[in-house]
Length: 319
Image (cartoon, rainbow, N blue to C red; front, side, top):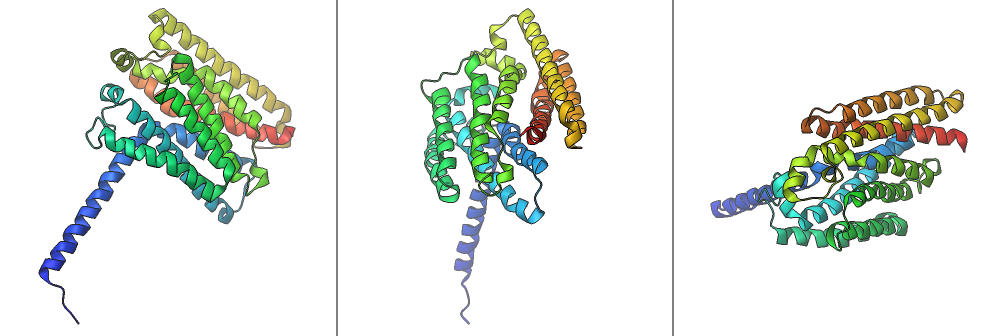
């Protein structure tokens, strides 16, 4: 048997080490790229999957492949948004989010643009190959919305910021539905539920701006809190808290009328009401940016997830 030479072993070792270093670097870039919006995408995709499991449970063997598809969609859509967002406005990230790949020096704008083009071209092609034409069309629709808001002509005033986040939920919710419902008819969720969540998000999404006020001032970003006086921000907090409480109470009232048809409805309605109360209190009684940040990234999505689960169970009884 032929023996390998020391030079060959050194070459293969160096190649292996270089390849491993490249993989780790790309993984670091991807994690930094996706982590700031991870909670929102987790809610859209994992929350969407969980709501269907609540509505019509399947055996574990059938659920795991659908979970895999959901994870693929989440990572792809998250990457498509974040690479465009961070490439088109790196200057703001130097102020607000210096740990992102471009301000951290891990990726140049030119390399980010190359990744952007690849993701936006290969993403729809991959969805068409894996899932068919409708998921691809939903993704292309979302790419158009991202372009209009983040690239050109950048229609991204305070109202459009809330509209973009709320519409993104609807578009990506329809994308997820077109993939999951093709396997299981009982997992089809009506567009009416997406519209109700859209309404709730439009009425509350501006709370994401409260913890970034200082950075927004430095970058001259026109968010809703930036346009208001201190008195106006207080009124905005009070109004948002009342909206959250009123919405949760109305949902509880509707759930009460059908709770005898499904044992899960009553405890879930109580849970969403409690989460809505906690969210409303934290919005109103915030003591600073740290509390606002935790309110948005933890309590906000906990409340809206409970609302989504309630709506799915209630719809099942009303249809």
